[in-house]
Image (cartoon, rainbow, N blue to C red; front, side, top):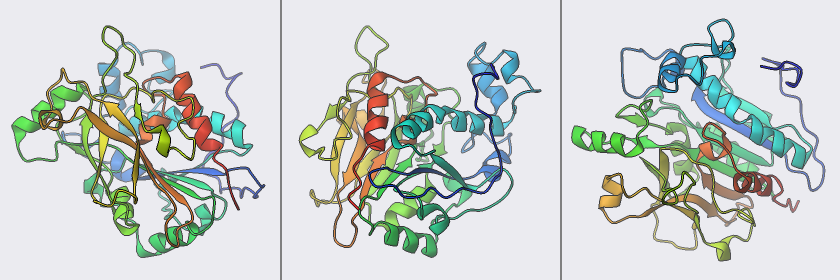
Length: 342
């Protein structure tokens, strides 16, 4: 780690309010997990927990065998893996900060120091785009409370707001152990247990805000035959009036991505902007049912009293754990440059 090129880092400080400037978008990330709750999981239980950093090192050996990642410099338990997620969004934060002129604020529902922060005016007052990252396991029982729902509804009445909801996968939701094994072999990630169900907080948020979507499965995206390059998205550019997919062909690779299943028959309520082809060489119940793509980016235009936009996109699109690309950075840039009408 070269200390000369890393900015000075602060920790456990109060958020500094970002003053509104016309045309500039203030972006905030909200991790919906309980950091202590996830880190204190019993390591003898295989399912519905994150891997420890030691397990991660074993799988990705020798990637994390330098001194930067040893016990003196980096956490070795589950908390180390959660910190990898935090570090993996730094590139997005840097790019978004350069585009908007504002630092990206990062909040956690319950942080390392044990402080709980529900979504309220402390977050919303200086936020134009709120990104809710759903990496809380269902068993942790994180739920959006009535006060939070009311605050978000009121915030969405303000023109120019954008709520991006990003629950991750729901692997092995069935009691059928054979199907769990098929799903495991499909995504091929040894760090993901046979059952790992994410996004209770985001699910409760979607239900309360009448977002007709359910995150399902953990699907392995297809690559271009004979290469390691991700197969291009199937993009509905005619519906992309926000222009968030301008100069975008792919997001980034991740071995287990959710299908955002639409649960309404009202076609004008929610639009599928992008679908990702699935690796059909790896059997999965979803593809065996005839599906060849999964919904990867959805948009709910303003409707009724809601003046803000609602987007659905997996949180890993904003991480660099599995690399980045010019196309992905174009998507980040487009999102950061979304016009504010107010």
